[in-house]
Image 1: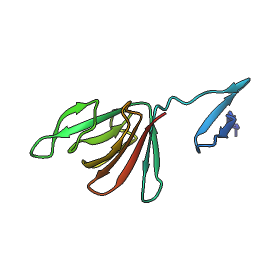
Image 2: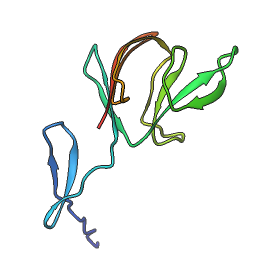
Image 3: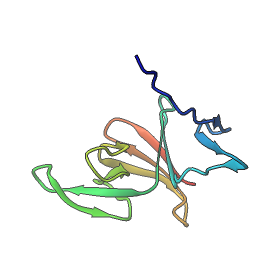
Image 4: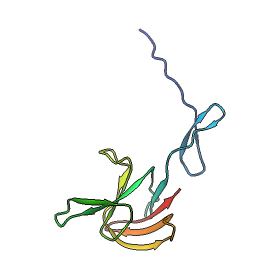
Length: 117
């Protein structure tokens, strides 16, 4: 019976709870640009990009946008069947920064904070 050789990849856990791969002289940086935190339980999701989805009257996809608005849902990349996270529709924008680096919003069932990293 032959043995399968497994390559071990050294990793570190940074101060934000994100795993990073350690490579020879340093650490490969992750490519996350956005972090979403759900208020009630601290659930945290990260992604490279985000979209705001709009629905039609039947609740089907209508369009995607770069800006949040009441009635739109947040979709975190990758933009495929394997997306990172999608919220329900925004019911209220509680707080936002002028430069777009921070947003606190309510959805139909949660309160979220979105940070641009």
